[in-house]
Length: 485
Image (cartoon, rainbow, N blue to C red):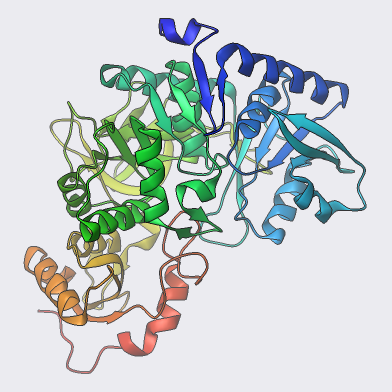
């Protein structure tokens, strides 16, 4: 803990209109904690945009020992309903406009960090959950039904403390929150860790950082926010970094010199994107984590950097490779899944394949369940080939197929301005660096962007492989001439 973090007059939050000192933040948290306790709330869901009010509600729930369920605004009504019922939520803190969805439920107005909100009371039954659960994060996953991951304060604080220790040499004093707070990565690494380190969290509404809906991103709006607020650090998803880099290159601009760290995770990043980002002044560093481990586990850093890797384990994390190549983690594990009485083992099997090199860097090679077995019996991780394709500046997103086929195929979403000839060159370049059984024999341009709105990806950017294949199967069916040497 730094001296700045202990100074009650030091700034904690900046919403672009006013700054909250640590003392003011603490006062707001205490007031809301009392409101929740008097209302006898057991399980609180928040359905809010990024704001100081979200931060206060999160900290107040923890102070009042109330389980907090952060719900992303991009969840569908069916997903929200599932989460509320599964977790036994008896109160929802939200904007008055959203509260209209529960018009028949009793509610009351309340003011949180200067924002008028509505506390909706629901007739929920108590639901069994692991003892000590403080937060349940619902992952969007690859299906429509989100899964609840139960976390306690010990695991979340361990991750925050690990980040504080690892990032201390960078002297980060200003973090721009660019992801929804309901996403665990921003909640832990973008709020808990900076606040613990004495930094200021810039908490703007999502539209002011270019995000709209489940997957809309305007890099021009985002860049303007970065320039205006001059942060030292940001956390981005790969598709956001891809769009920002393309914007900077197209406009011949560079990222502000204030930036010391742009952490990127949530999906495969690739050495090519990292290099392209750094060429335009974005200090991009890839990391790796998962909700079951309370977020980030490994991260590249300026003094410990290997761009083709996901970095070394952070101080709180233990990482090993099991027989068969699966990544296992320990050190900050969840308490369990909501609705599942089983406790997690001492080492959690992540479902990701990878290896740790002689210098301790983790290399993630893809999901075990996604491994393709070609007609020639070759096992291929599609993420491995996709990363090779995405290393080319012409390719924004690639998805690779070929299970049971004689050769691999790919669906490519291009970067702005890239034509078919550029995509073919990208395929040729990737093929030249891949073994024969992992080369792309057939490819097609994607029929729609890879995002949640098109149904081609989850809200956090992971490809919906079944939907992508179904939409492009005619173009990917191999001819009788396709062979795999």
